[in-house]
Length: 322
Image 1 (cartoon, rainbow, N blue to C red):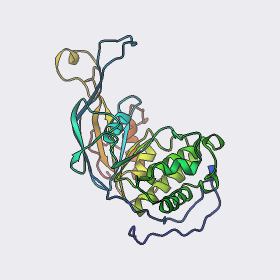
Image 2: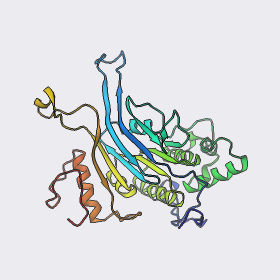
Image 3: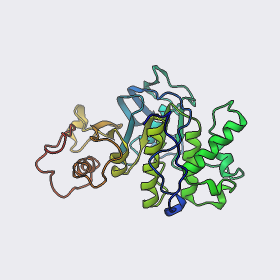
Image 4: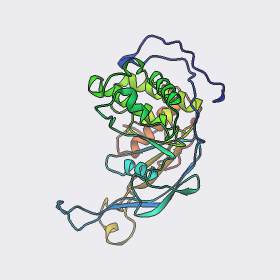
């Protein structure tokens, strides 16, 4: 189904947890920018310590030598342990931070400060408390949007995320999950070429989170954009992404650090990359995805309690069955 022919059914089923309604698998598309490629080349980020830290004087490498091309329209999930630089990588892509080394380009040109080709969905909703839900969503509209077109787009997005009935409420009057959905709608209002999502569903309860994952797939199918998704949820990554990268530190291989058992090279880089097989939406009970889940959890340092039917431990994960 093309974006030009996808239409809303307007039929709403029984409301699910948190007020999100089950919807048919088609949604109304917006007029979107073309999906854009994102390229990281030798990217590194080192933070200088503040004067108030105990380790004042020692710089802290967070990312190093990250090289990756995200294709236009691709959904890339970024996994890694807490503090490994996932959100930092996302911020650099959107021009909210600058790399210490290397570069990032969007559609072949360097990312700029607060790059208008991107939209960001943060971990926290970050809604303005004095504005209504609808008014907060309207902040994401591209500059110069006509008033009536803007109102129609906001209404469409509020319906899409199940917040039509709360359009006139202020953030203090809605739940945390509703606020996060309003934040997602605000990001979509920009019609971005690149959508940067930093654990956008982390505040939602389990069932609503599953519905929102399906909703994101609907939106992407109707109006594809390039998506970089940071998540701690391996299952979410497998359900949503075309490709998954795992950030982590590599063992030290040179110098005195190599002589220290378990020593690692400072700064996280891509230690594992895999293409998720199968078309979306995927079967959450798939044995194939279960194998990949175990492999990713092992890469995150989680004991999977047994080997994966003799699959050798490496960064290239073969297709199921093995």
